[in-house]
Amino acid sequence: MNTDILIVGMGPAGIFTALGLIYKGDKRHITMVDRGLSIVRRSCPKEKVGHCIGCNPCRITTGFSGAGAFSDGKLSLSWEVGGDLPELIGADLVQKTIGRCDDIYLRFGADTHVEGVENPEAVAQIRRRAIKAGLKLVDCPIRHLGTERSQEIYGAIEQFLVDSGVTMLYEHDCLDLLMEEKEGGKACVGAVLRDCSAGASSDSFEVKASEVVVATGRRGAAWLDGLCQRHEIKHESGPMDLGVRVEVRNEIMEDVNNVLYESKLVGYPNPFRDKVRTFCQNPGGFVSQENYDNDLAVVNGHSYKDRKSSNTNLAVLSTQHFREPFDRPIAYSQQVGQLVNMLGAGHILVQRFGDILDGKRTWPSELSRSNVVPTLPDAEPGDITSAMPYRAMTNIVEFIKLVDHVVPGFAAEETLLYAPELKFYSNRVSMDEHLDTNVCHLHCLGDSSGWTRGLMMSSVMGLLMGEELADR
Image (cartoon, rainbow, N blue to C red):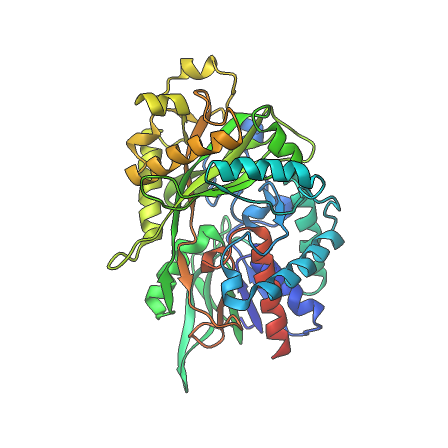
Protein backbone atom coordinates (compact mmCIF):
# COMPACT_ATOMS: atom_id res chain seq x y z
CA MET A 1 0.00 0.00 0.00
CA ASN A 2 1.28 3.47 -0.88
CA THR A 3 0.26 6.96 0.15
CA ASP A 4 1.80 10.41 -0.05
CA ILE A 5 1.48 11.47 3.58
CA LEU A 6 0.99 9.01 6.44
CA ILE A 7 -0.27 10.37 9.76
CA VAL A 8 0.01 7.95 12.70
CA GLY A 9 -2.48 9.03 15.36
CA MET A 10 -5.85 10.75 14.96
CA GLY A 11 -5.62 13.16 17.89
CA PRO A 12 -5.66 16.97 17.48
CA ALA A 13 -2.07 17.14 16.17
CA GLY A 14 -2.74 14.59 13.44
CA ILE A 15 -6.15 16.04 12.62
CA PHE A 16 -4.84 19.57 12.22
CA THR A 17 -1.91 18.36 10.10
CA ALA A 18 -4.48 17.01 7.65
CA LEU A 19 -6.53 20.22 7.87
CA GLY A 20 -3.42 22.33 7.23
CA LEU A 21 -2.66 20.35 4.09
CA ILE A 22 -6.24 20.51 2.81
CA TYR A 23 -6.75 24.22 3.52
CA LYS A 24 -3.49 24.94 1.68
CA GLY A 25 -4.85 23.16 -1.39
CA ASP A 26 -2.39 20.25 -1.25
CA LYS A 27 -3.75 17.51 -3.51
CA ARG A 28 -1.52 14.69 -2.27
CA HIS A 29 -3.15 11.65 -0.75
CA ILE A 30 -3.36 11.54 3.05
CA THR A 31 -3.75 8.37 5.09
CA MET A 32 -4.47 8.49 8.82
CA VAL A 33 -4.16 5.48 11.14
CA ASP A 34 -5.26 4.91 14.75
CA ARG A 35 -5.75 1.98 17.11
CA GLY A 36 -9.24 3.18 18.02
CA LEU A 37 -12.58 3.75 16.36
CA SER A 38 -14.37 6.37 14.32
CA ILE A 39 -15.91 8.97 16.61
CA VAL A 40 -19.45 7.80 15.84
CA ARG A 41 -18.52 4.35 17.19
CA ARG A 42 -16.72 5.61 20.28
CA SER A 43 -18.65 5.23 23.53
CA CYS A 44 -17.51 4.29 27.02
CA PRO A 45 -19.43 1.22 28.32
CA LYS A 46 -19.17 2.66 31.83
CA GLU A 47 -22.04 5.01 31.00
CA LYS A 48 -24.32 1.95 30.82
CA VAL A 49 -22.85 -0.55 33.27
CA GLY A 50 -21.65 1.91 35.92
CA HIS A 51 -18.04 0.77 36.14
CA CYS A 52 -14.95 0.46 33.96
CA ILE A 53 -14.80 -2.87 32.10
CA GLY A 54 -11.23 -2.40 30.81
CA CYS A 55 -11.73 -1.95 27.06
CA ASN A 56 -8.55 -2.68 25.13
CA PRO A 57 -7.78 -0.26 23.64
CA CYS A 58 -9.54 2.23 25.91
CA ARG A 59 -12.50 3.90 24.18
CA ILE A 60 -11.73 7.17 26.02
CA THR A 61 -8.10 7.55 24.95
CA THR A 62 -8.04 6.04 21.43
CA GLY A 63 -9.85 6.70 18.20
CA PHE A 64 -10.58 9.81 16.17
CA SER A 65 -9.67 12.96 18.18
CA GLY A 66 -7.87 10.84 20.80
CA ALA A 67 -8.63 11.67 24.43
CA GLY A 68 -9.95 15.02 23.19
CA ALA A 69 -13.35 13.53 22.31
CA PHE A 70 -14.01 12.56 25.92
CA SER A 71 -12.07 15.31 27.68
CA ASP A 72 -13.61 18.43 29.16
CA GLY A 73 -12.74 20.13 25.86
CA LYS A 74 -11.01 23.30 27.02
CA LEU A 75 -9.10 25.33 24.44
CA SER A 76 -6.45 27.51 26.11
CA LEU A 77 -6.17 30.73 24.10
CA SER A 78 -2.79 31.92 25.38
CA TRP A 79 0.70 30.83 24.31
CA GLU A 80 1.69 30.69 28.00
CA VAL A 81 -0.37 27.52 28.54
CA GLY A 82 0.11 24.17 26.86
CA GLY A 83 3.75 23.17 26.84
CA ASP A 84 7.06 24.31 25.39
CA LEU A 85 6.28 24.85 21.69
CA PRO A 86 6.99 28.62 22.02
CA GLU A 87 10.60 27.72 22.86
CA LEU A 88 10.90 25.95 19.52
CA ILE A 89 9.14 28.32 17.11
CA GLY A 90 8.56 31.56 19.07
CA ALA A 91 5.70 32.91 21.16
CA ASP A 92 4.42 35.31 18.48
CA LEU A 93 3.94 32.58 15.88
CA VAL A 94 2.28 30.32 18.44
CA GLN A 95 -0.16 33.04 19.51
CA LYS A 96 -1.09 33.89 15.91
CA THR A 97 -1.63 30.22 15.13
CA ILE A 98 -3.78 29.78 18.24
CA GLY A 99 -6.08 32.42 16.75
CA ARG A 100 -6.27 30.54 13.45
CA CYS A 101 -6.90 27.18 15.12
CA ASP A 102 -9.58 28.80 17.27
CA ASP A 103 -11.29 30.05 14.11
CA ILE A 104 -11.31 26.49 12.76
CA TYR A 105 -12.93 25.15 15.94
CA LEU A 106 -15.54 27.91 15.69
CA ARG A 107 -16.15 26.98 12.07
CA PHE A 108 -17.02 23.45 13.17
CA GLY A 109 -19.39 24.54 15.93
CA ALA A 110 -17.42 25.56 19.04
CA ASP A 111 -19.16 27.84 21.56
CA THR A 112 -18.43 31.52 20.82
CA HIS A 113 -18.27 32.39 24.55
CA VAL A 114 -14.80 32.79 26.09
CA GLU A 115 -14.34 32.17 29.82
CA GLY A 116 -12.17 34.26 32.14
CA VAL A 117 -12.21 37.68 30.43
CA GLU A 118 -15.29 39.40 31.85
CA ASN A 119 -14.27 40.50 35.37
CA PRO A 120 -10.68 41.83 35.56
CA GLU A 121 -11.11 43.28 39.08
CA ALA A 122 -12.23 39.93 40.49
CA VAL A 123 -9.26 38.30 38.75
CA ALA A 124 -6.99 40.90 40.39
CA GLN A 125 -8.38 39.97 43.82
CA ILE A 126 -7.62 36.30 43.23
CA ARG A 127 -4.12 37.22 42.04
CA ARG A 128 -3.49 39.26 45.19
CA ARG A 129 -4.36 36.25 47.34
CA ALA A 130 -2.10 34.07 45.20
CA ILE A 131 0.82 36.47 45.57
CA LYS A 132 0.41 36.50 49.35
CA ALA A 133 0.51 32.71 49.33
CA GLY A 134 3.65 32.66 47.18
CA LEU A 135 1.85 31.36 44.10
CA LYS A 136 1.58 32.64 40.55
CA LEU A 137 -1.83 32.91 38.89
CA VAL A 138 -1.88 32.31 35.12
CA ASP A 139 -5.23 33.66 33.94
CA CYS A 140 -5.67 32.16 30.51
CA PRO A 141 -8.80 32.80 28.39
CA ILE A 142 -10.63 29.50 27.85
CA ARG A 143 -13.04 28.36 25.17
CA HIS A 144 -14.96 25.49 26.73
CA LEU A 145 -16.22 22.94 24.24
CA GLY A 146 -17.66 20.54 26.81
CA THR A 147 -17.26 16.77 26.75
CA GLU A 148 -20.46 16.11 24.82
CA ARG A 149 -19.94 19.05 22.40
CA SER A 150 -16.34 17.98 21.78
CA GLN A 151 -17.62 14.76 20.24
CA GLU A 152 -19.99 16.67 17.96
CA ILE A 153 -17.30 19.13 16.85
CA TYR A 154 -14.70 16.46 16.17
CA GLY A 155 -17.37 14.39 14.44
CA ALA A 156 -17.94 17.24 12.01
CA ILE A 157 -14.19 17.55 11.42
CA GLU A 158 -13.90 13.81 10.84
CA GLN A 159 -16.66 13.93 8.21
CA PHE A 160 -14.94 16.89 6.53
CA LEU A 161 -11.68 14.93 6.27
CA VAL A 162 -13.45 11.88 4.84
CA ASP A 163 -15.31 14.08 2.33
CA SER A 164 -11.95 15.61 1.38
CA GLY A 165 -10.59 12.21 0.38
CA VAL A 166 -8.51 11.31 3.46
CA THR A 167 -8.18 7.55 3.97
CA MET A 168 -8.98 6.53 7.57
CA LEU A 169 -7.52 3.27 8.88
CA TYR A 170 -9.31 2.68 12.17
CA GLU A 171 -8.42 -0.22 14.48
CA HIS A 172 -4.90 -0.43 13.08
CA ASP A 173 -1.72 -0.70 15.13
CA CYS A 174 1.49 0.92 13.99
CA LEU A 175 4.16 -1.68 14.76
CA ASP A 176 7.22 0.13 13.48
CA LEU A 177 8.57 2.76 11.12
CA LEU A 178 10.22 1.87 7.81
CA MET A 179 13.73 3.29 7.51
CA GLU A 180 16.20 3.46 4.64
CA GLU A 181 19.77 4.68 4.46
CA LYS A 182 19.98 7.44 1.89
CA GLU A 183 22.52 10.02 0.90
CA GLY A 184 22.68 12.47 3.75
CA GLY A 185 21.52 10.01 6.40
CA LYS A 186 18.60 7.91 7.51
CA ALA A 187 15.14 8.54 6.03
CA CYS A 188 11.65 7.39 7.04
CA VAL A 189 9.78 5.89 4.09
CA GLY A 190 6.62 4.56 5.74
CA ALA A 191 5.37 2.32 8.53
CA VAL A 192 4.47 -1.26 9.36
CA LEU A 193 0.79 -1.63 10.28
CA ARG A 194 -1.52 -4.38 11.46
CA ASP A 195 -5.30 -4.57 11.34
CA CYS A 196 -6.35 -5.26 14.95
CA SER A 197 -10.13 -5.34 14.39
CA ALA A 198 -12.12 -8.39 15.45
CA GLY A 199 -11.63 -11.28 13.03
CA ALA A 200 -8.80 -9.61 11.12
CA SER A 201 -5.66 -11.47 10.08
CA SER A 202 -2.70 -11.04 12.42
CA ASP A 203 -0.42 -10.40 9.44
CA SER A 204 1.30 -7.03 9.23
CA PHE A 205 1.68 -4.96 6.08
CA GLU A 206 3.74 -2.02 4.92
CA VAL A 207 2.54 1.44 3.94
CA LYS A 208 5.06 3.47 1.96
CA ALA A 209 4.87 7.28 2.20
CA SER A 210 6.92 10.29 1.17
CA GLU A 211 6.27 12.02 4.55
CA VAL A 212 5.45 10.38 7.90
CA VAL A 213 3.90 12.26 10.81
CA VAL A 214 3.80 10.56 14.22
CA ALA A 215 1.22 12.18 16.52
CA THR A 216 0.18 9.47 18.96
CA GLY A 217 -0.68 11.60 22.02
CA ARG A 218 0.11 10.83 25.64
CA ARG A 219 -1.05 7.27 25.23
CA GLY A 220 1.60 6.74 22.54
CA ALA A 221 4.44 8.51 24.37
CA ALA A 222 6.04 5.30 25.68
CA TRP A 223 5.70 3.66 22.23
CA LEU A 224 7.39 6.66 20.58
CA ASP A 225 10.14 6.58 23.19
CA GLY A 226 10.88 3.00 22.11
CA LEU A 227 11.01 4.05 18.45
CA CYS A 228 13.45 6.83 19.28
CA GLN A 229 15.76 4.31 20.94
CA ARG A 230 15.44 1.78 18.10
CA HIS A 231 15.91 4.15 15.18
CA GLU A 232 18.26 6.70 16.76
CA ILE A 233 15.75 9.53 16.54
CA LYS A 234 17.34 12.31 18.55
CA HIS A 235 15.55 13.08 21.80
CA GLU A 236 16.14 14.06 25.37
CA SER A 237 14.48 13.29 28.68
CA GLY A 238 12.06 16.02 29.65
CA PRO A 239 10.45 16.79 33.00
CA MET A 240 8.10 14.28 34.56
CA ASP A 241 4.71 15.13 36.09
CA LEU A 242 3.32 12.98 38.91
CA GLY A 243 0.19 14.01 40.73
CA VAL A 244 -3.32 13.57 41.99
CA ARG A 245 -6.77 14.78 41.01
CA VAL A 246 -8.36 16.90 43.74
CA GLU A 247 -12.15 17.05 44.19
CA VAL A 248 -14.03 19.57 46.35
CA ARG A 249 -17.55 20.92 46.57
CA ASN A 250 -18.47 23.61 44.03
CA GLU A 251 -19.09 26.03 46.91
CA ILE A 252 -15.38 25.95 47.76
CA MET A 253 -14.34 26.89 44.20
CA GLU A 254 -17.31 29.19 43.52
CA ASP A 255 -15.38 32.49 43.21
CA VAL A 256 -12.68 31.04 40.98
CA ASN A 257 -15.17 29.08 38.87
CA ASN A 258 -17.36 32.12 38.27
CA VAL A 259 -14.50 34.50 37.49
CA LEU A 260 -11.94 32.36 35.66
CA TYR A 261 -13.65 29.03 35.03
CA GLU A 262 -10.15 27.51 35.18
CA SER A 263 -7.47 28.88 37.49
CA LYS A 264 -3.89 27.86 36.80
CA LEU A 265 -1.79 28.27 39.94
CA VAL A 266 1.95 27.60 40.00
CA GLY A 267 4.17 27.36 43.07
CA TYR A 268 7.48 26.07 44.38
CA PRO A 269 6.69 24.84 47.90
CA ASN A 270 9.20 23.93 50.60
CA PRO A 271 11.23 21.90 51.22
CA PHE A 272 12.21 20.80 47.69
CA ARG A 273 11.17 23.92 45.74
CA ASP A 274 10.04 21.81 42.79
CA LYS A 275 7.43 23.24 40.43
CA VAL A 276 3.86 22.26 41.34
CA ARG A 277 0.81 23.43 39.41
CA THR A 278 -2.91 23.03 38.97
CA PHE A 279 -4.16 21.73 35.65
CA CYS A 280 -7.44 20.82 33.92
CA GLN A 281 -10.03 22.34 36.27
CA ASN A 282 -13.58 21.07 35.80
CA PRO A 283 -16.35 23.11 37.51
CA GLY A 284 -19.38 20.90 38.12
CA GLY A 285 -17.33 18.10 36.57
CA PHE A 286 -16.75 14.40 36.99
CA VAL A 287 -13.63 12.46 37.88
CA SER A 288 -12.95 9.74 35.30
CA GLN A 289 -10.72 6.76 34.67
CA GLU A 290 -8.58 6.18 31.58
CA ASN A 291 -6.90 2.89 30.73
CA TYR A 292 -3.47 2.69 29.14
CA ASP A 293 -1.39 -0.24 27.95
CA ASN A 294 -0.70 -3.08 30.40
CA ASP A 295 -4.00 -2.32 32.19
CA LEU A 296 -2.66 0.89 33.74
CA ALA A 297 -5.58 2.90 35.19
CA VAL A 298 -5.02 6.65 35.32
CA VAL A 299 -7.35 9.33 36.70
CA ASN A 300 -8.58 12.33 34.71
CA GLY A 301 -11.51 14.76 34.79
CA HIS A 302 -14.42 15.75 32.50
CA SER A 303 -16.71 18.76 32.37
CA TYR A 304 -19.92 18.75 30.34
CA LYS A 305 -21.84 21.72 28.96
CA ASP A 306 -25.26 20.61 30.18
CA ARG A 307 -24.65 17.88 32.76
CA LYS A 308 -23.25 19.11 36.09
CA SER A 309 -22.22 17.60 39.42
CA SER A 310 -21.98 19.23 42.86
CA ASN A 311 -18.17 19.11 42.74
CA THR A 312 -15.18 20.69 41.04
CA ASN A 313 -12.11 18.61 40.21
CA LEU A 314 -8.63 19.59 39.07
CA ALA A 315 -5.18 18.06 38.83
CA VAL A 316 -2.27 18.97 41.09
CA LEU A 317 0.96 17.95 39.36
CA SER A 318 4.48 17.84 40.78
CA THR A 319 7.21 18.33 38.18
CA GLN A 320 10.59 16.68 38.60
CA HIS A 321 13.70 16.84 36.43
CA PHE A 322 15.93 13.77 36.52
CA ARG A 323 19.57 14.02 35.54
CA GLU A 324 22.09 11.58 34.08
CA PRO A 325 22.39 8.66 34.05
CA PHE A 326 18.59 8.31 34.36
CA ASP A 327 16.79 8.56 31.01
CA ARG A 328 13.49 6.67 31.43
CA PRO A 329 10.98 9.08 33.00
CA ILE A 330 8.00 7.50 31.22
CA ALA A 331 8.86 4.05 32.56
CA TYR A 332 9.29 5.57 36.03
CA SER A 333 5.83 7.15 35.85
CA GLN A 334 4.31 3.85 34.73
CA GLN A 335 5.89 2.06 37.69
CA VAL A 336 4.40 4.60 40.10
CA GLY A 337 1.00 4.18 38.47
CA GLN A 338 1.18 0.40 38.72
CA LEU A 339 2.00 0.60 42.44
CA VAL A 340 -1.03 2.81 43.06
CA ASN A 341 -3.22 0.48 40.97
CA MET A 342 -1.92 -2.48 42.98
CA LEU A 343 -3.12 -0.91 46.22
CA GLY A 344 -6.51 -0.21 44.65
CA ALA A 345 -6.87 -3.74 43.21
CA GLY A 346 -6.78 -2.29 39.69
CA HIS A 347 -8.97 0.72 40.52
CA ILE A 348 -8.22 4.39 40.97
CA LEU A 349 -7.29 5.11 44.60
CA VAL A 350 -9.06 7.88 46.57
CA GLN A 351 -8.08 9.35 49.95
CA ARG A 352 -9.27 12.25 52.09
CA PHE A 353 -6.72 15.04 52.59
CA GLY A 354 -7.26 14.97 56.35
CA ASP A 355 -6.39 11.28 56.46
CA ILE A 356 -3.13 11.98 54.64
CA LEU A 357 -2.23 14.57 57.27
CA ASP A 358 -3.19 12.10 60.03
CA GLY A 359 -1.08 9.33 58.49
CA LYS A 360 -3.95 6.90 57.96
CA ARG A 361 -5.83 5.32 55.09
CA THR A 362 -9.39 6.30 54.15
CA TRP A 363 -12.24 3.86 54.76
CA PRO A 364 -15.52 3.65 52.80
CA SER A 365 -17.54 4.54 55.90
CA GLU A 366 -15.60 7.79 56.22
CA LEU A 367 -16.38 8.78 52.64
CA SER A 368 -20.09 8.18 53.23
CA ARG A 369 -20.12 10.83 55.99
CA SER A 370 -18.47 13.50 53.85
CA ASN A 371 -19.98 16.57 52.17
CA VAL A 372 -17.93 15.64 49.09
CA VAL A 373 -19.57 12.71 47.34
CA PRO A 374 -17.04 11.10 44.94
CA THR A 375 -18.02 11.46 41.28
CA LEU A 376 -15.93 8.37 40.48
CA PRO A 377 -18.00 5.87 42.48
CA ASP A 378 -15.80 2.83 41.75
CA ALA A 379 -12.64 4.51 43.10
CA GLU A 380 -11.15 2.47 45.94
CA PRO A 381 -10.66 4.23 49.32
CA GLY A 382 -7.13 3.64 50.56
CA ASP A 383 -3.70 5.16 51.16
CA ILE A 384 -2.11 7.00 48.24
CA THR A 385 0.99 7.82 50.29
CA SER A 386 1.97 4.13 50.41
CA ALA A 387 2.65 4.18 46.66
CA MET A 388 3.38 7.80 45.67
CA PRO A 389 7.08 8.80 45.95
CA TYR A 390 7.85 10.82 49.10
CA ARG A 391 9.15 13.85 47.25
CA ALA A 392 6.14 14.16 44.93
CA MET A 393 3.67 13.54 47.76
CA THR A 394 5.33 16.15 49.97
CA ASN A 395 5.21 18.67 47.12
CA ILE A 396 1.51 18.00 46.58
CA VAL A 397 0.56 18.27 50.27
CA GLU A 398 2.47 21.52 50.81
CA PHE A 399 1.06 23.01 47.60
CA ILE A 400 -2.51 22.20 48.62
CA LYS A 401 -1.89 24.05 51.88
CA LEU A 402 -0.73 27.12 49.92
CA VAL A 403 -3.76 26.99 47.60
CA ASP A 404 -5.96 27.05 50.70
CA HIS A 405 -4.89 30.70 51.19
CA VAL A 406 -6.20 31.50 47.71
CA VAL A 407 -9.27 29.25 47.87
CA PRO A 408 -10.33 28.87 51.52
CA GLY A 409 -11.48 25.33 52.23
CA PHE A 410 -9.33 23.75 49.51
CA ALA A 411 -7.24 21.97 52.16
CA ALA A 412 -10.25 20.80 54.17
CA GLU A 413 -10.16 17.42 55.87
CA GLU A 414 -12.81 16.06 53.48
CA THR A 415 -11.08 17.19 50.26
CA LEU A 416 -10.61 14.12 48.07
CA LEU A 417 -7.38 13.13 46.32
CA TYR A 418 -7.47 10.53 43.52
CA ALA A 419 -4.37 8.83 42.13
CA PRO A 420 -2.53 8.26 39.92
CA GLU A 421 -2.66 11.36 37.70
CA LEU A 422 0.22 10.92 35.25
CA LYS A 423 1.15 12.88 32.14
CA PHE A 424 3.12 10.86 29.60
CA TYR A 425 5.05 13.47 27.66
CA SER A 426 8.45 13.21 29.29
CA ASN A 427 10.42 12.25 26.15
CA ARG A 428 11.12 15.34 24.04
CA VAL A 429 11.98 14.70 20.38
CA SER A 430 14.67 17.01 19.00
CA MET A 431 13.35 19.11 16.10
CA ASP A 432 14.14 22.33 14.26
CA GLU A 433 11.77 25.25 13.72
CA HIS A 434 10.36 23.50 10.63
CA LEU A 435 9.33 20.52 12.80
CA ASP A 436 11.88 18.22 11.14
CA THR A 437 13.66 15.53 13.15
CA ASN A 438 17.17 14.23 12.44
CA VAL A 439 15.52 11.49 10.33
CA CYS A 440 14.52 12.79 6.89
CA HIS A 441 10.77 12.90 6.18
CA LEU A 442 9.87 12.05 9.80
CA HIS A 443 7.97 14.52 11.99
CA CYS A 444 6.82 13.97 15.59
CA LEU A 445 3.99 16.14 16.90
CA GLY A 446 1.68 16.71 19.84
CA ASP A 447 1.92 15.48 23.41
CA SER A 448 3.87 12.34 22.50
CA SER A 449 6.63 14.54 21.08
CA GLY A 450 7.11 16.22 24.47
CA TRP A 451 6.52 19.72 23.07
CA THR A 452 2.81 20.22 23.74
CA ARG A 453 0.25 19.63 26.49
CA GLY A 454 -3.40 19.83 25.64
CA LEU A 455 -5.82 20.29 22.77
CA MET A 456 -4.97 23.77 21.53
CA MET A 457 -1.18 23.55 21.45
CA SER A 458 -1.35 20.14 19.77
CA SER A 459 -3.71 21.65 17.19
CA VAL A 460 -1.28 24.53 16.63
CA MET A 461 1.63 22.18 16.05
CA GLY A 462 -0.44 20.11 13.63
CA LEU A 463 -1.69 23.08 11.61
CA LEU A 464 1.83 24.45 11.21
CA MET A 465 3.09 21.00 10.19
CA GLY A 466 0.42 20.62 7.52
CA GLU A 467 1.14 24.06 6.08
CA GLU A 468 4.90 23.38 6.17
CA LEU A 469 4.47 20.15 4.20
CA ALA A 470 2.11 21.81 1.72
CA ASP A 471 4.65 24.56 1.04
CA ARG A 472 7.43 22.10 0.16
